[in-house]
Image 1 (cartoon, rainbow, N blue to C red):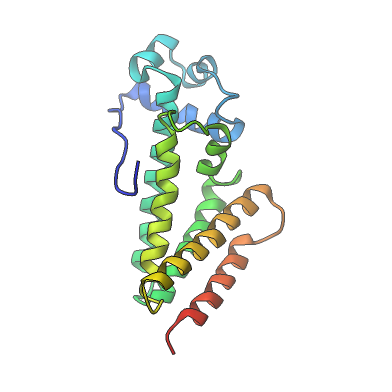
Image 2: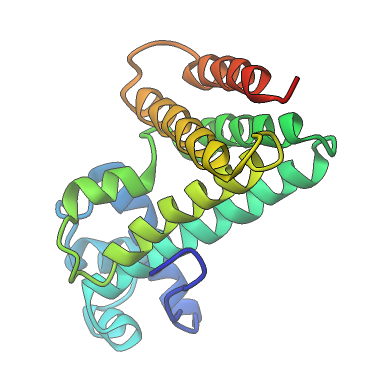
Length: 200
């Protein structure tokens, strides 16, 4: 899945929504491989038959979990971008502000995509394109925002990649709790990069 392509989504009945809500919580808290369909069904208060009728497989539940989380993150981020002052610097920094707020509210265990990739490295898994596509989308976003700062296309690509590395490093450091306020630190470094990259 590229930056624009999205997976087909399942229409949510009430039972399917309960299954997905239970799976989202369990997958994020315990890991994907550690959680079986028996536990998901029990937590959702449905039978395994209902689970399989709605989703067909555990793999499909994983796709819905990751695609739904990505969809909510993009909408959350867009609100920060819309509210930011209309300057290139402010819009880039808004991404770090959004990630800090999202992680405080929804990401105590770090990035769900990074965590999922630690368990799903097979490109043939149906959730693999969701994981990679989310990161491709973030890189495209940073590169597009960097294009308003850098002097040329090559500079925008280089700056976009560096901003992406800062952002992803902050996500991992937050999840591992290796030092306090990683998003603040990453934001400060991003601000310095933007200052250096701005045409004089």
